[in-house]
Length: 333
Image 1 (cartoon, rainbow, N blue to C red):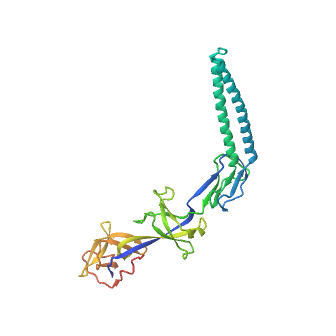
Image 2 (cartoon, rainbow, N blue to C red):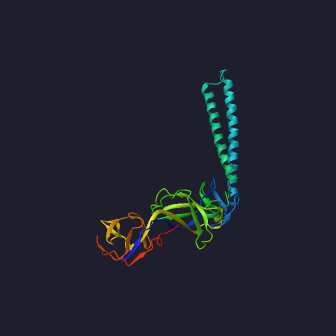
Image 3 (cartoon, one colour):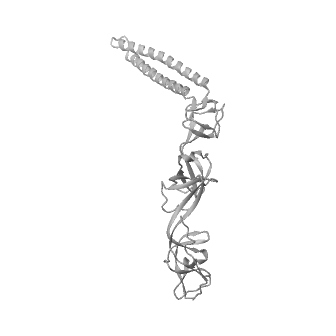
């Protein structure tokens, strides 16, 4: 039978996460007015700079709309001038009895109607003026085109998304975590991140966001890690890896064969000074590859059965063939 001397040691379990690089900010660009797209020189994957021309609507159609709106405004301005003159004349004639109250009220209503129609036409003209000014689509920041919803020659509606831009200035690593988050993991915690295949190029990122809920589709919790400026050389979509350390406190690592059960709960065989065994319950901190980490139930110096305890019973006297070194199995930082 193989035994092991209990030695409680501090342990940190390292978990490796795999994710990809994404942009923190994505802008969806659209024309503020409807029209036919005559120019769209960029495609998915193209890199653009702030202020760069990305698209243009047909200017002829927009200018025609503006000219029509201007003509309507001028016509209504003339109608308003006539309505004002008629109302002023009725206002002069009414006190002298040369007109009646109904004619005066008619002219007053006509004046208010002309003023309202002119205001409406002027608003349409302003919209047409803005449409001509906004016929060009410009990049809002240095970015990469990640989506293009239309092509040159298509007619778009006002506000219809044309291009999506992923900004360069704030890359982040995104991971999907399938298990319960390590205790103590908080926003702002540092994580070492490196591109897959280049462990030497490790950078230190900081946890920016922990999703408040588990994804119903994948059953994972999303973690977003802000990356430093050095990581801007990583293309969007690059696969990255991060190490996440979980401190477990003081534990003892035992082989899987040392773990038994007592009334459905984890337990191990404890060897007393007379080399008799008794089954004691323990608290398991973590099940790891090839070993189990015990957090409570044992004390420093205890001698436990590491292997060969399958046929034991309480009070049985045992012979110890060898004693394992305890510290060799405890995972370190």
